[in-house]
Image (cartoon, rainbow, N blue to C red; front, side, top):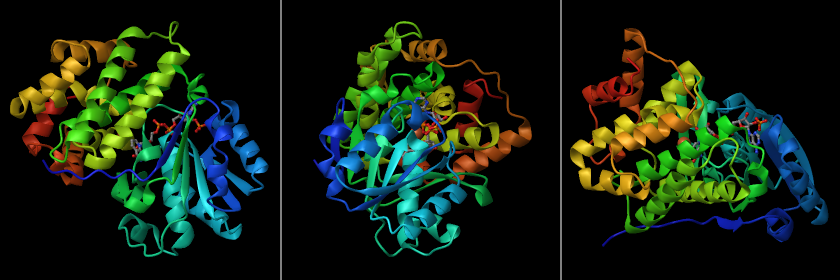
Length: 368
Ligand code: NAP
Ligand code: FE
């Protein structure tokens, strides 16, 4: 047996964890920049709780609240500029994956005077500011990963930067912030989390520990998705989803993502599909691809979801996910396949897909 497992993030889970563990913030400095999205953190209580914790600990703060979905480098650099001006000693990302990822990249750009190209090429030398992450969706798992996924205009796609120094110093997960998450975002983000655990399981970097976390997360998300609808979803379901999405983050922190994310990014960049939905529409056909090479592992995924075969996986996903009508033109098909073939995480697949395999996944997903 050989494995490596590294998770340096201090994880605090449960209602009122920001209030209960405010001392964790004190340990990081006296001045903080909060990086968040435009609206949701003001409505779900997360920003208010953070501000009162900072006040209680005597920490000065500013708020940068302009992070958009699929964060741009422009927003990252504006946040970094604000952090520098106020001499922030740490950065707090509050929101879904987008604000948490923008916070991580801003933490790098705040301490390194480098161009956007050099940031994406990982050419920073100074350590980033410490990062605190407060997720308000149950999806990205970014609160426990060493990745920041950003929109890269000059490459016309989304790309991630990675590094152990991008692991948040602390993650504070309070399920109450997800209470009023709209139904479509609840589902899309849950499917993203499921995708992390599946891609981390169908991965040649998977280890005994990442498998344990992945199967637990797949089984929780499978069970919740089978049982919830827009009317009957409870706080217990939401708590389970937040827990499972954190587990999914801990999985990809070890393995990275794979085919589904690689092929999903062009759907977000060119077709503006939400990240989780883009993964969801490719999931069944990607599992069919894996099934040709690793049927035993696919069977474990299906069983963990509490289902009997891949048909049932497809049926469950179509039942819960928002319906979309989407067909790629032949030109788009070529671009999407090209972009996917360039993604470095394809190499994590137990059998590296070729262009024909990607074509088959698109075709079997009814996207051609
Ligand atoms: P998101 O892009 O952060 O946010 C999506 C929407 O949800 C926004 O409109 C946001 O509003 C809203 N929202 C967030 N929390 C809410 C709440 N509690 N109640 C109501 N609305 C809320 O969504 P996400 O799916 O969490 O993150 C996706 C991003 O994460 C993608 O860019 C993806 O590539 C990235 N990702 C990163 C990793 C990683 O390891 N770093 C892993 C997977 C995915 P506001 O804008 O007003 O806040
Ligand atoms: Fe994701």
